[in-house]
Image (cartoon, rainbow, N blue to C red; front, side, top):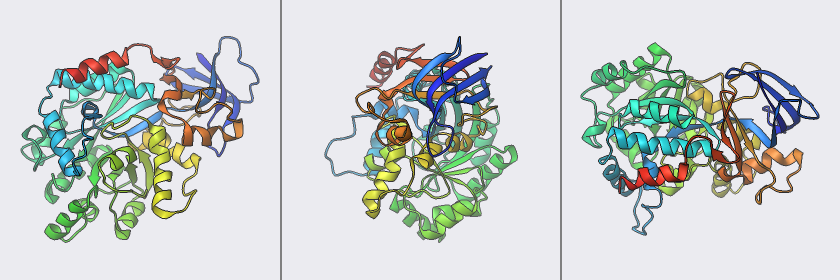
Length: 416
């Protein structure tokens, strides 16, 4: 048994608890004791605030190679950025995908991310599964059905051919499977219904890009006389296992549909503002993602949900730190098919992240304000310790297995 003594730990309430002992047996939490004044003999002390491991609910790992390379003042849009993304995707092979994903997933570990949902339409599935295992984090591989548009390498011949291919994939102890309808632009209604049935038959997570751009809504209304979410609902996609990614341009009816289905809404604010998508408002159960890897920092994604709403509404305090922390942890884990994770409680996965409170951004934070301070002012750089399955993966802010900057530089350099 391994024991961790936390100076402060967030157990899901409004405030962090002081002096919490977490005992782990294998990869699970066996016991949580609040008020243990000092670390017991043999326990590892974790100064700062300890939270459940963070879930990155929407990622395209290969887009990490675009960071800083798409910012020229071109008066462009999502659509012009997409051409640069296509050019990068055209250079990928399984080996390059593996190297870039391994380095990117390791960067996520440094940011406190212990589970990632990789929304994969490049279809280097085995490379993604191996990359996550080698980087030390959990993975839900979300294989995307993509039939129309895009690059030939993204496309399956039909929804049936997609299903035959995905049926050959196998989970592993650290990797589970989900599926995606890439978008209503890339998947016709009959094929979307095929994907929905495939997911329902297996009780797998089902994700989709939905209403990211006004042009997407306009085209769908013109062609099908429905919004993208209405089309997906008619195709049988909506359920408590469904995640609408972005949902930036929902109307009131869309919002009600998602909420009535008890589905998830994954916002990726750093990407949505980087691509000039607009300000999304959460509906249903909120989760968070790094998407294009403009930055990898779930704390930034969390606070951006609230701060962007302040810009759009002129009102402060729409979402409490507790709600944003739940989106980054328990909600994200559940949306990716890991409902036993994302919380600090007996029987849960022993996935933890500790944020230091003595660095320049958070020094002077009193215990009653620790959660607010971390959510609204902390960054990935403040992550001190990351534990996955009861074992340390990041210690002193350094990955225990991988030289992350070196591997990122090498993997990205190979694609330039």
